[in-house]
Image (cartoon, rainbow, N blue to C red; front, side, top):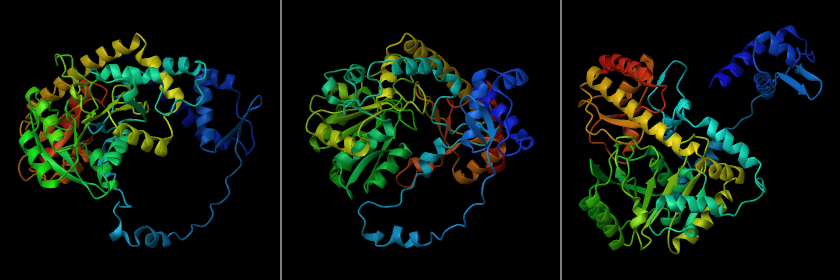
Length: 477
């Protein structure tokens, strides 16, 4: 983090000084910059590379860095108004909509402005990411024989075997495909399992990114309510009968956004109901590696207890590492595996081999279990800090369930609260929150917000964020 900040600071200082040089003029040597700014040669190299990427300087190996020539005036803007017709013509007849609403996903992907507390983040704060371990793994991976060659389309056998062991049960290496992140895996699964126009059963509330996937594929999400013990089996059976759906998407472990864990007595019921309906269960096991240290033994993935190929399992390394470490797995049994493989090949060919090799190096290193133990303790501490701060400063926000895994809390707002107004007021107060409406595929029963405790620097920032949220609530409630 300090190196990254130093690069940004040095690039900004050099940017301000460029006017001292005429176009083509030579900047001071790297050695002079190191001595003057008291930074490392690596920092100087990265800062100059950043300016080169911006078109402000030109670097010449062995000669140094030079101010780039003045940019020519931009060409006049063209007329793109014709695209409105091309993109919308005959749209009413499209089975798959050509416009895609990504707003629910962007809420957790967009970085807030500087100084804003990030309660809307969907990934670990950089201080929780295993940056050194990932960098070392990537360096070792690059030295592996054939590391830059073409991998098997299904993924490296050793990595597939690791995911198969992680799932457990009778899942084998041959039943696992390596994919580029959980979002990509879910997209492949829904395309494989349901034709455009078909209904797909989803938990209510559920992950907005999955709803966006379904709608962009022309599917019709049908909500099935969840409670503290996960999806309600009786309502699931009713939904299958009423819709004729052949797919149910669920997160049995630390569900997003409620944090619920599917109760032991419901696990078998869900599989039985789906099997009797002739339907698949897509199991999004997205945060198994973000368990809190007070959670106790975790239930196995549904796929581990499924001999009949009902479950299509999605597991990922991304949430426990970095948003850029996009390595995940699809596991399935039976003929559906061929369809999943075919769609994956058509869409992406394969996951880049260096990333797969780096994943193998990471999960096989002593740093991996140490990292998991660290984030287990850190997430519990942050969860407890946020819970305590909310109870003290915002008791009017109901917190029906405190999860023992994952990275967020799901709060119910007082009746009549305007989610949009509260979200805007919070941002004005300096804290970014996630409104609850995008998590529902139909009308929500009440207003909600989701607060992440993983994307911030630590407990002190959590307390400050809750204090700012108190200011916003005073304005809106």
